[in-house]
Length: 474
Image (tube, rainbow, N blue to C red; front, side, top):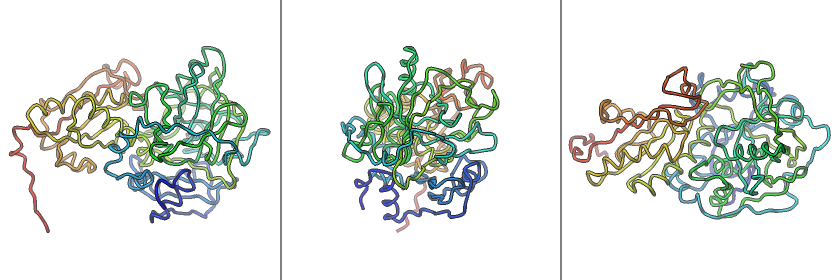
């Protein structure tokens, strides 16, 4: 089986089995409320999970208390598995995806999608009909964490897909959190100004190419660019989409489950029990604070395939970092190579920064001027991906995927009074708890931050002073 034969979650699982990737099956009955998330967090969600930094295989929980649907966690826990599923190399994912960003493989509209083999429009009860996980006892409620939201701009008709966290608020309502700058958030604001709801579908259980493509953002993918084109470019064919059953929106045709509804022009407290309570464990490794006001989604239908699989993520961890980091790598590589220097060789966004806040950029210097161009590229990275916070500049003899090598370069090729560039009060990510005025007076608002470039490269004229020991074992 080849990667270009993958088109949905089921073929992705078959592909991984074919390639020899272990997929664990848990037959012990387990509860969606804390028990399944706790098991997977300990089993191997990966750093920065507090208690168990191991990287585990995907797990299918076959016996979910009170539900007939199995729960899948960890499909993209391994970077190697991600690469094989996308048909690229594990150390070149970003470079290869960068060349696909603006390929035109538009979605293909079909009738009678598999995602509508079963349809519920009456007596909707999200708690009973879907095995949505509650992550910790302090969480605001059950959260959908791999819900790919698909919507259209109410003015232009342009489409977008993005993953947003959704907290169940009642049997047929959910809150939705739009991180500032997300395109569907712009669509919602346009609809809200008209005092109209925004039709959406929430697609669960997908071809991994779709989930990874959805992680791209501006400026690589400007407002109005549908990231499904990138998923199509990966597969070399348009993603199959269909009309939703109840609200006129579009859905992913081979989703395991689709929730249809409207984002209403009204708001709700994310944690219904406590105004300043918790949300859920966030991608950076901390317990998130619940938002005081979030838009409300009214559900109008649930559709699903025969024998559906409910796919979700337990964060923080490797799977979430891969989903965030791989698109970031592609965006950074493409932007820097085209605008600053063609001497960039590679890029890696590790789980230590949740795939968003930390980047390792690798360069090859061929002349003295490259010292300045490399530093300029470090600064430019913050424009290429606005949520980025820290950048390490590294030479071509450093393995950027090994953080021991990166820290070695920091220790031996860095001087604090010379090799650092810091810029205050730039736009960052509101879920980083250090990006608050209480942490630093330089942060004027929540989500503003100091951004720093660590130049751990050797000055071009001093290369001979930095020759690494080489035991050329044969």
